[in-house]
Length: 208
Ligand code: 3PG
Image (cartoon, rainbow, N blue to C red; front, side):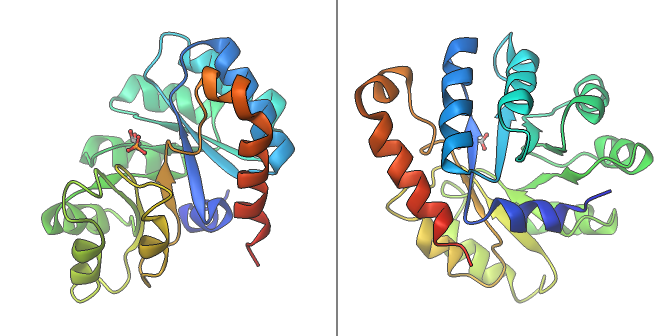
């Protein structure tokens, strides 16, 4: 059973957060990511075909860790246990935390405040998604949190882009960042697949 720290370390430096228009779009992105050697992906449950998209990613990227994101309730968590390598929520709930522990699910809950970090850490979660990172204080907030929470490890997501992701990665309490900017639209893919491929190659080949 892998733990959440292993997931975020493997995902580094950036975990693509997938929100796809269609199954075809998801499949084309999975093929691009497989070719580029992307190590881990979060597939959000924000489309009617999202579970099918998760399956597509698992089929096309057998070497990568495939996570299910935007998990908000028990039903989604219980399905994700069987169909994904790890589970991410945008916020923290004790109910989902307990279910994750009970089912031995690799779980990364979301937090936005010191109070939520305390609640999550009280339930043995020290690897946390910070969401929506940029809107709630971004790098300054994460720096401030190192004092009271030296053991917390964050994967900030939300509003992160090519322009600012390195500022986040430079922080000692950030293991990786999440972002949708690595996921090309169907139009961008048709226009510049090679450009995305080389951008992704550079991103992950720089990892030591
Ligand atoms: C998420 O669910 O983590 C976010 O929607 C991703 O945020 P971004 O689109 O700003 O990268």
